[in-house]
Length: 64
Image (cartoon, rainbow, N blue to C red; front, side):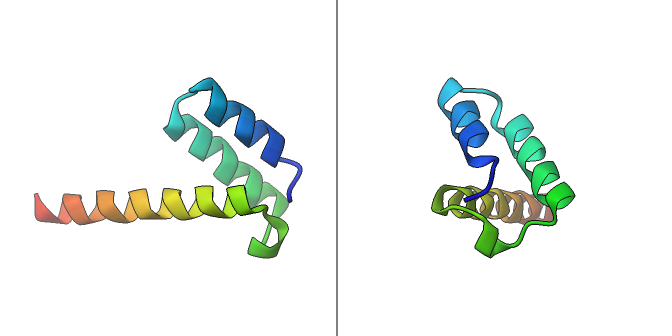
């Protein structure tokens, strides 16, 4: 579990903008040079969902 899990949970529960939350979290991961093993289950799932959303977005862009 990283030191960011509690803040991630708070942001998700409060209904804050998901894109803003994702940008904040990705910045935290990059700045701390975190690896998958440093993340909690929630954080891994969140990162995978970010990746899935990005992949779908890119696929939709290529169709148009």
